[in-house]
Amino acid sequence: MKKIKKVLVILMVVSLTASLLAGCGSKPATPPVDDGKTYSMRLATVVSAPHPWIDMADYFAAEVSKKTDGKITVTVYPSGTLGDDQTTIDEMRIGTLDFVVGGAQNAASFIPEYQVFGLSYLFENTDHFEKAIANNSPVFKRYAQLHDEKKLDLVLLSLTGGGVRNASSNLRPIVTPADLSGVKMRLPGSPIEGKIWSAFGALPTSLPWNEIYSAIQTGVVNAFESTISGYYGSKLYEVSPYLSKTEHLYMLSHFTMSQKTYNDLPENYRAIIREVAEEAGILGTQKGWEAGDVLLDEMISKYGLKVNEVNKASFIEKVLPLHDELAKDMNAADILKMIREVR
Image (cartoon, rainbow, N blue to C red; front, side, top):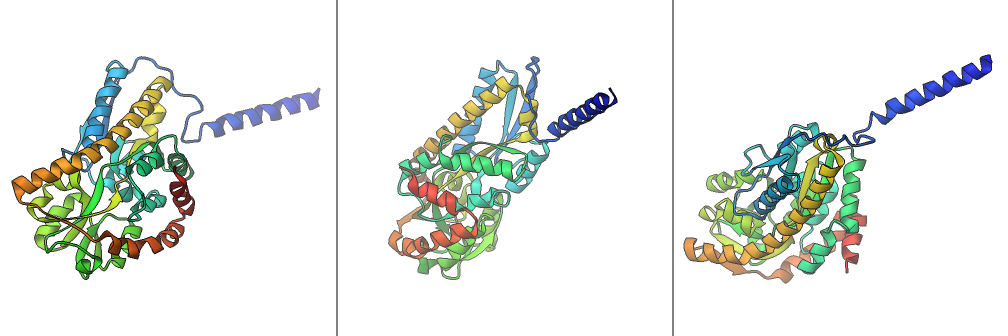
């Protein structure tokens, strides 16, 4: 009898310990029950309208409200009003901010593997890019896995586009890498992009997006690269009148959610958020393609923007041999392989 009691006590202790350990993870074992509560959430982005990120954020807010019968309200905060990328991602991690739509390169300090999308001339065409980043793709699944592995307390909802990036300058048109020799160039905080533009001859300077305008004005930098939507929305044509169509990068953006916010939601609301975020990601990519030519034509006719073609072959010649080495350096050789295998 004493032995039986002892065994029962041991089993109770083991069961209690297992229960306590189950409650220590960042994700609850079971989602909370839908009790009819309402939720007020905030979504931050650093860009100003018109911009594909704003389009997708507005769509997300409207659709989530509609599909939850107004139980979830999402307010969009554009133009960096809640802080730069680093600040807003940090706030998501502690649960004081709910969503961020931003550039993947600016999130590279949290997910270094995002830098693989900073490899210039990585994609063959828009179809290649769209297939690579789809929510059912091996690439997306790998990045979602990395969020969990790194214990960031962040949930990746979708990867999206934002348009094609070009180089701009207040000095002169850029036609070949020789035109960048010794030019101070603003880049996001991705070390890989720094290495690439150094190979082109530029002098990289890392600055937040919303500091580019004043940095060009004051001579801190003389060049930068951006999508046409970003260039237009931030009125950078006022300080940098030369846009050179390097078309070196398909802009990768991330739509990410606070794990704490996610954990607090009932399962039916989680499913709605994931579904609508995927739709918003597809919309953002499409809006990025559509905006380019329209906005470019407007800036040429209204603001005298000077646009020129470039010798792409001279840029590609310098960067393609670096792809494998740089992907290995960022521990993303597997992701580069996945991207190359997309069909």
